[in-house]
Picture (tube, one colour):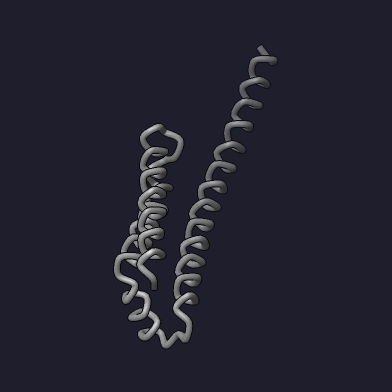
Length: 113
């Protein structure tokens, strides 16, 4: 990996990290959601500082192309985030259904009085 590419990756990864931290501070992003993105940016910084880690993981899993390790890691992270978000949406839908039912019951009770 060329030094220019490594420096570019480090700069982009650190910039991404600061964007996520800034979003959490301004309450645009919840900290539990930001945790996955912060970990991703730190892993990207580590891989750009020490690219031999990617080669070590590639040798560990007997992968021919190192880019496949990176794609697999990103894909795994996105699947995990997708699962977390779907569970949150399911819980929110259940809460919304319960609130709608309670409001309907309260409206019906007020009409009877």
